[in-house]
Image (cartoon, rainbow, N blue to C red; front, side, top):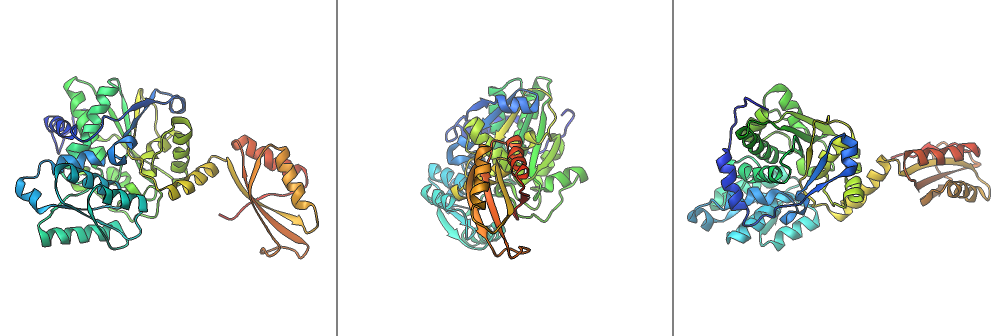
Length: 413
């Protein structure tokens, strides 16, 4: 975009932050993707911040903020609240700088994130059932002890640290025309968009910035249309890392001027994106980090030339990954879940299995019951989960069953 009024860090401040952050953060890989290039109709690269230290970009902003504390502030320690990535970023940054860190996390936080935060040396306090509860407790702790509260996104130093990612993108893909990334509170997109816009302005060029939110929690999508930060009531989403009720104040002030568009994606599309990244890019990415790929796969982003998608994090709980992969397979029509009514006589189950086998599909789960609702006394219900090779193969399996006199129906989700 051109003729913008930028708030927040200057380009010089982003460059200074990059020098500070370079002491702890990796320059993460930039990988090309033929599959996504074909899907978008333009050259696509993946900025693999899922391979960053702590598993996400958050170490950048956390370290930049903590490294600028004075001696008295460092002596009082720092405090933060998070259910995952911000917690780990602050914990590692504090350890590297020799600062005591206390992190408040909600009860029920994923065990790998809890353990990683502790392993980085932070004192973890569990309490409350949400990140909002943890934030309140962290701020009370700050008031009582003098520990410096480190916000997850709404602070100039945090934004400057996150923006160092944008400067790396320009170094690695100088001809980039579009950058796609997730939006939660807005620290990442505010930093990256501001940094690259200012850098491009130096050379008289422009760059397109696309933000992506989960459809169940998308305050930026509404706020950008209304021109002011607007709260929403978030509903559950697998992309919990970007589930916020309202944009950050400074973040929105920046994003309003330098972000070109914001789109939303559904959880099923995000699950499918995670599966695509596993299979085609060999990248383990958390839901919040995969929404940019989901936006491309669902054709919500129009091609404008060389594109970089930021994979913002890879901290996914293995139990969540198991559920997400199953959801992704179902969303890709590679995991059929259906039911069929059978006469209650010997051989029917074997016959259905034989038909599915002849169609070269694989039965992975079977539930056989005489007690389902609506069943006649002479009927049984067979509920099956079947692996297929995709939509066309799935329809072939269904057609084979119908040709043999069965009437498969979608199973209750």
